[in-house]
Amino acid sequence: MLDREKQNRENCIAACAAAIAACQACAAGDIRAGTSLCALINLDCIDICTATMNAMARGSEHHGDFCTVCAHICRACATACAAHAQVHEHCAVCMRACEHCASECMKHAKERHL
Image 1 (cartoon, one colour):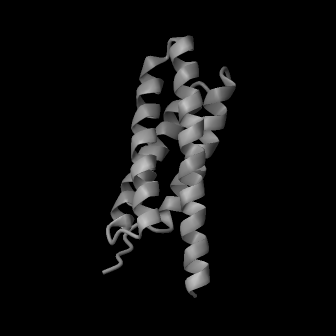
Image 2 (cartoon, one colour):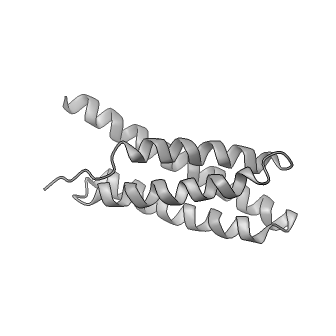
């Protein structure tokens, strides 16, 4: 059981790291493309994914709360990127990474380790 929990936690951390990388690339592309509103949600997503990844890695008793918020922000970012995904490849990549991160985070939402 603990091995499965550890693997699930590692999957979530990896999804957060992938979303961070995709959002960084997307924000840079958005700034060049003039889609600053999309770049702003990318920055929010980077911040919450970083915080969530850190909470998961240290085994924070509040990691479920971080995951809940992270899933919400990742979904918002994916939605924003979807509006430009047909035109900008960086938005399509970011959309997929954020959708995956939201899915992984929802597996841990509401968990508590006291």
